[in-house]
Amino acid sequence: MKLYAAGFNAWGQLSFDQPADADMGEPDDIHGFSLILEDARIDVVTSRGDLVAGVIASDAARMSGADCLSCSALNGRVVVYDAKEGIIRQYASAQQPSASGHGQSEEFSFELPGIVQLVAYDVGFAALTSQGKVWVWGDGRFPECLGRGVEDVVAERPGLVAALEDLPSGPITKIAAGGYAFAAVTRGQDMYCWGRYLGRQQHRPVLEELAGEPEPVVVTQGQGDGQQELDVADVGVGEAHMIVLATDGRVYVVGSNANGQLGLGKGVESTAPSSWTKIDGISADGQRVAGVYAGPRSSFIVIDS
Image (tube, rainbow, N blue to C red; front, side, top):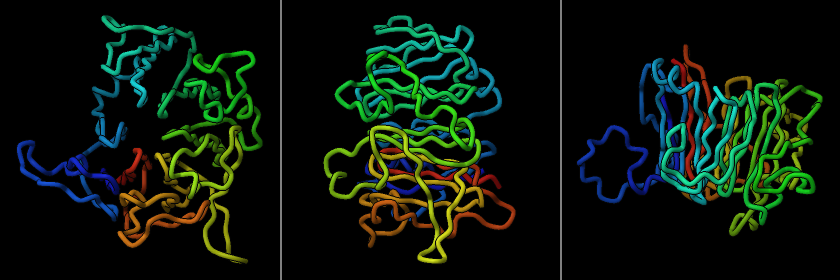
C-alpha cells in the first residue's frame, strides 16, 4: 500500500524517509500529492495539530486494538472507548491514558455499546455505532458543531444527532471531523455535513451548505449541462478544507490550499465554496484508492496496490 500526502510540513512530519537525526533545515510544505510511505498495510491515518499520529496497523496491532478506541481533541481532552464494557470515558489530560485510565483525571463515563468509529474535532468528539447512529458532544459555546439541540442533553455529554436518523439512502457508515466541521456518509453514498466556520474561514467558506444541523452536500464534477453528481465512498475534513473519494475511485478536494493541503500547487490559494476539484495522477493501472484522510492543514490518500 502507498500513502500520498500534501500540505503543512513545517517540522518535516510528512518526510518519513528522513533519518531521525537528519538536519532538514526548514522543510517546505508539500503542494502536490507526493508518495511519502510504502508498506504492506496502511490501515489508519490520524493527524493531530498537523502531526501525523499513526499510519500503519499490522495484523497483530489491529487485533489488539480492536477492544479499545481513543482520540484526543485540540482542547486537551482525551476520549477512550472500551469495547468490552461498551463504555466511553473522557479525561481532562492530553496525555494518552491507558484503557483503564489509570492515573488520569476522568471527567465522565458514558455507556454506549457498539461504537465502530471515534473522531475528534477541535473542542469535542463524535462516535458512530454499528447501527449507524451518530453521537456528538463538546464545548457548548459552539452549538453548531453538535448537530443537535441541547434541551435534553447538555453539550458536554454525548447526545444523539436525530437529523441523521432514517435517512433516504440508509444509515451512516463513516464520519469525519476537523476544525469545527463534520461530514457523514450514508450506506447509499450520500454525504451530510454540519458545523461552523471560524476566523479567516468566514471570508471563504468551504461549503455553501454548512449549518448547525446536518444538511446533504452534493459533490459534483463538470460544469453546466455536463455537471454530474457523484456518490461518496470516503471523506476527510480539515480545518478549512475537505477531501472526498468518489465511488468511481477518483479524489476531489475543496477549500483552502494555503499550505498545499489540496495538492493543487502553489498557484492556488483556495477553491470557491463547494467548487470540487479532481486530483489527477494518483491512481494507476492495478491500483485503487483505499481511503482519504485529512489533518488540520494536510491531506492523505491511501492507495491499495
